[in-house]
Image 1: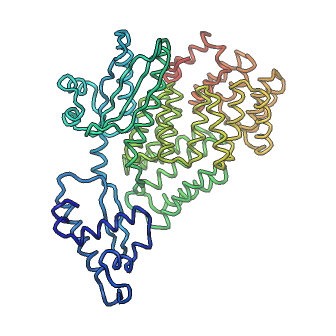
Image 2 (image 1 turned 90 degrees about the vertical axis):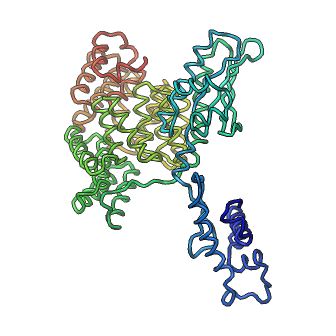
Length: 565
């Protein structure tokens, strides 16, 4: 309103204020031509006729020109641009990507020790470094390096000066202080570049539990930071194809992707057929090849096909997509899953996931798959960040709750897993992932009656699913019924020859059958079994820790060897 373009045009400024205020209020009636004429231009309601008095249309057109002039002369782009679409009197508020990127720069200041105990200095250095690292790994734009922040803080402690010197719009300030007699209070606050406090989070714990205090505050402050700093960037980004697909092919691709959400063999086969038809007609479409790769990867999870042959087909389709578009997020995500679970190369898998998320930050599937990889590697804190981001971008997704339940089970947070499974059911999830997942959570938690009931329900609803039979075999082993468990394992071998060897190791481990357990794990290594990392996180394998043969197998898989016991 104070700009050169508007301050000398009071009628245009009055019109703009009216339009914006009523648009924000959601008052559609006030944004009709007649209402604008009567309220803004004071036309007489008894004589006004829009057919003979074009005052609203003419002034809107001139206001549109003034807005264009206003934004053309901005020194720095605003966060939102007011746009007056032609044919409408309701203004749109359009996020400006350049402005969002510029405003996302953040610096984590050195945490201040107000507790009067120098032995806590190392704890605060660790907290600051870990929070900075988490923000960087979450894909936050311009997280300033610790060395640069430390150098700036040596010259000034004024937030405004630091914001200018570091070129950021956000500062994270932390303090550790005493709380009553033997307690500690860790506080984190977010400051804008104007030094205004946007929010404060505080946690308190006994001094002896400073480690858990730090962990709690890392999780709490990280989610608040992501919610605040990424809140303006939730705009939907669409993965592009080179060249663009015609409408019928684009519809086929979208249908293929939606079919995969059913998590059934027939729907997945239909998804593959649709994607194959598009690749045949449009072999230069990265989207088509990437969708085919993703559909084939989903098909592999049913364990009824040769995984080596299917894996080669996935490699081929993903490779074709990336040859056309090296930054394609769907192809990068698929490649990352294979690289992490099959090839067990954590660094390359992480790079592929981060490339996918750099191209498409709101790509829910990539985030939850990345979270699972981080959990499999024992990086539980980082996994929680990715799951929090996935929920932030797609809060109504059943897949996010499912991924949270899986990761919580693997991390042995069984109560959290139970809550997540209940949310999956509320969201309408009814796949084998849910039925088997609930049973295996109960089994891992030692709730044998619940696990048995869940396994029986799974087998009743999906009698032809190999995982249902495997679930019954595991429950029988946990009950001590070795004969029944081995008979079911034999049925799996006869009916489903491609069922993962690492899964078959679980009932053997529950029976404390060392030879069979080690044998199946060895076969899983030879076959590059994609479920090996998941299976070996089950508590049933804990009794083998320290066994020379078991440790030898573990040492051959870097991700498995590196994670905490």
